Image (cartoon, rainbow, N blue to C red; front, side, top):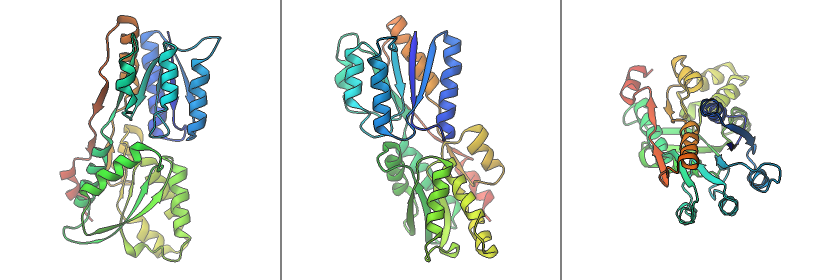
Length: 300
């Protein structure tokens, strides 16, 4: 059995860990997993998956992928089902899942974390980190506008962030380099002053660390120290990166988002080999790290 695993980018810790988990589980199951990476390009991702489906040499038995855009590639999904290729979307619940599941013998499902809840957790973390009743400004580094997870996290954050906080939004691409570039561009503006901000919130730990790296390069010593003294909040919460950065005080908090690649792979293999039909969509829950109540103990 051969499964194709599609990544958004190779420059993000969560994407790399998803690929590593898929490789580990594939070895346990005794199947082949081929990994391809779109590097943030939806057209490239579409072509990668289509070429695999239409391969005359050896088409995959199934495809598991994390979509670059919020569409979830509906035309590619239909082509996969028509060719008898199983289809799993990670971190997105496209409307076409129900439609395609009604086709005879089709294996179609999705799995992911509640991304809106990720944003809600970040809003509650921010409220706990900042002194009660005090307003101010927060720098927010979001993922790509076309990415549904980024939009859902932003919506959740808006629901729970303190109402007296103003948000300055920068755009990144989930990677450390994109967080660095976004902040470097902002720092080039005459209005960029550390004294105007209370915290830096990023939708991924990697972007938060990229932001820190940009602030570390500020030439003025007092301004640099002021930026670096701000609490940095991230998300993804992998043990070797996000959680480790919290424990080393590089981040004030993160949000643990469970990996899904291994579980999705097992479910797909069970569906193909044992005719065990997976649910249409399986949703996991994010967890704050550290516990939100513990953030009080870390207030400056």
